[in-house]
Each structure stands twice: as structure tokens, then as C-alpha cells.
Image 1 (cartoon, rainbow, N blue to C red):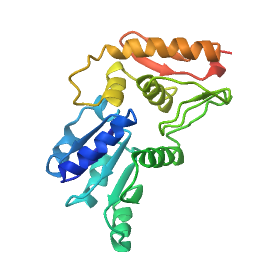
Image 2: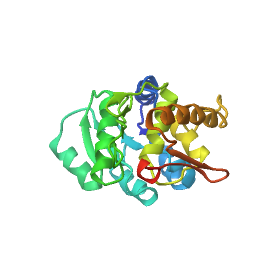
Image 3: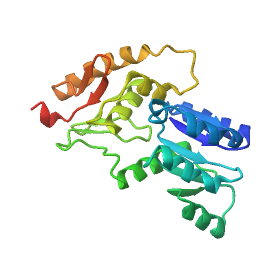
Image 4: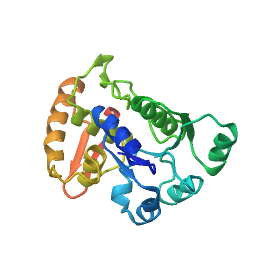
Length: 228
């Protein structure tokens, strides 16, 4: 899930629509609400955030510090309307991971966020034995060098599990990452159906089931080395 902070509702809505077309959940938060939101949100919910986008808002140089108190390595990307060296330097000094000049396509934002996670060691896009690769930018995953076409919800679940590989995540975290925090039109139990279908497809292509599930504890994507 992507969180957009911008005092212009129409801008935030534009980005949320763009991410939705890519199958990525996102929410827009007004700057005056962000302080209380980021300090009060539960660990489960904030664990589903893949990146923070800082748009046009006052005090945005304060936001990276607030964010880092809750999530150490989640990418923070600033979006600028104009090119300004002084503003860019101030934003980097405040702790943002990247500064991007608008307009920018949402897929580029996803790629930049994934690149930041790779640099920090938080993200690996390929298993050690190299038999599956996940791209995190809207492209379908590859298994053995061949594309595995997946419905967008299954692809997003695979991306979230892969990003957290060897770490157990709850059904609620997966739901929040894929459907967003404010989606009341879809029941959380839909995650189980998506994962069941995803596991069958992965098992056919990989020869083993890479998703370990434990009741009440959640799901974990495991390397095939442990299943050899």
C-alpha cells in the first residue's frame, strides 16, 4: 500500500487512481491529519505500507522523522512540482530517500521504491537459486525465465509475500497491502481464496509449495532451498 500526503485532494485522488489501475492499493492523507495518523496507526497496518509519497504540504521536512519513528526502512519519496536545488537539498537533509520531479508515472514510483528497498537490503527480487523473480513494478513474475501470468490481486499478494520472504505476515497485513486500509467493500477472508489459487499455480511451476501457512499466525514465503 502506498500512502500519499498532499494538501490538494485532487492530486492525491489522481495518484490513488493511477495506483489502482496498476492493482496497487493506496490512500491519500491530508497533511493536517498525518501527524496523528502516523503516530496512532497499528503495527499491523503500518507494516503494509510500501512507500510514503510527500507531495505539496507545509512542514513536509518534518515528516521523514515522524515516519522513521514507526518504520525504519520504508521508502520516503518527495514529489516536487518545480525544479529547485535548494528544496531538493533540504528534503534530502530531512531524510527523504528520493526526490522526483512531477509529472511522474506511478510505475516509476513503484520502481524507485523497490530500488530503495533493494539498496537497504529490505528487498530481494529473486530467490537464491534464481528460479523465481518478482519485479514490483506491474510486470508479471518469472519462473525459470518464463512469465507466470497472474490476476493482479494474486500478483500483488505474491509481491507482498516475496518482499517479506522468510518473515511471517498476517492475513490482515496482506489484506491491507492489497486492498488498502479504508476498503470496506471486500471481506478480509478473500485473501485466503487468492492465496489458495496462487499456491496451486506456484506449485505446478516450481514443483513445490513455497507458501507456508499456519493457522492464527499467518503466511510466509519460503525459499525452495528448504524444500529441495
